[in-house]
Image 1: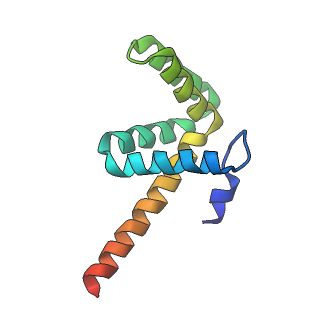
Image 2: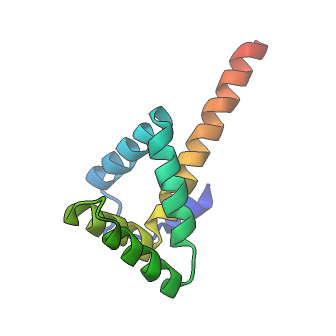
Length: 106
């Protein structure tokens, strides 16, 4: 888990930022739609910057999101944070699966 310490972020790790991350992870573990959203945003955030910006323009042009939602999506994609969140979500999910398997085997 050493790469978790190198998250792209503009703020230092605080209890508030950790709480927000935990909340995002919980939502994604509970909701398939939220998980799919972060899976997609994570993939986009790993593209070349020009491709990221092109995707953001498509989101803006779609008319499906409010300005606040567009700004949040843009920050997650441009900063690369969406990919980091997706990695954390996957790690937590893998740990949950391991625990459930161990409980079945015991």
